[in-house]
Length: 261
Ligand code: CUA
Figure 1 (cartoon, protein in one colour):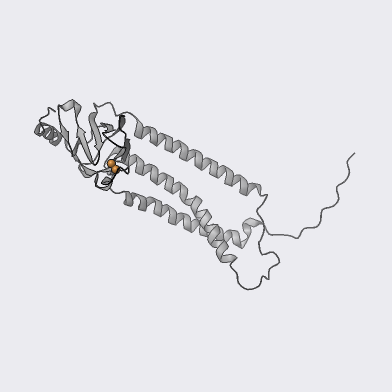
Figure 2: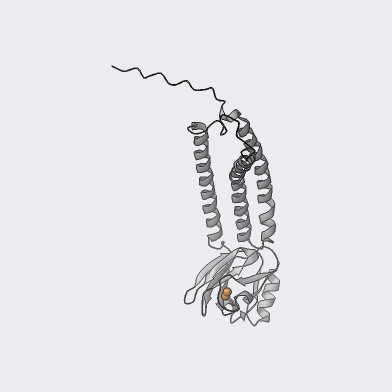
């Protein structure tokens, strides 16, 4: 036996939220800001990061671009709502409208559902992309015999030695182009951070510990080696140069240092 529910109070006819002028204005702003955001993501970060001189840096830049492009529509939606709200509901004399807030989207399954599933899909995509890029960057050097370089930081210089090539020790890093290189990084005193700026390699140099990392330089040129960990008075001056050279030049350099290539 069911009791008939009392009749609901008559509600005034309200327009659908998705045809409201407010929604259209937000959608237009969203589209404009998304285009601006995507253009920004495709150009500015890459320009700011400068030359890419290794396979690692190429992967880092690609990942950075993908993440920035994916973030653009999300940021654009927030800006669109904020800009529209600031303009539309700015104080302009007395309120005259009966319903100054417009139609509510609370309880709208389509709006909440698409927000939840859209966000979830985006996060999942970025997670998978990020893990794949990390695996790519972290994978052991390719089948080709990698070059081994021991890197030592001390206040406030870097030194490099090439254990496979005899007793070479140098304060300028030389690398042959297109050959995978494995760095074994340590420190003689405090914690430093070995940073090959244009190669996307940055790893801590810890005393009493050896940290291994790798990359493949893929562009001949002269690039920066810096310290990226505050390590004392002259931290800012703890920098040197990495020369990426053709293989023959590298072999000649090894010989000039008294080693055997
Ligand atoms: Cu070494 Cu900062």
